[in-house]
Image (tube, rainbow, N blue to C red; front, side):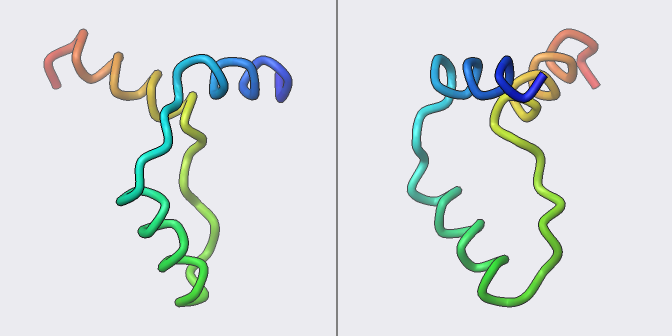
Length: 53
């Protein structure tokens, strides 16, 4: 599954400077690493859009 997620990330994930800053800030502040992967984020975004949640 990890290889599939890595593939999806390379195909659909574009680097976002603001997102990278947020992730760096979370790490610097000692926050737990609970962020979802880019591929999971894309899936969640799609599900929210489809269900109009």
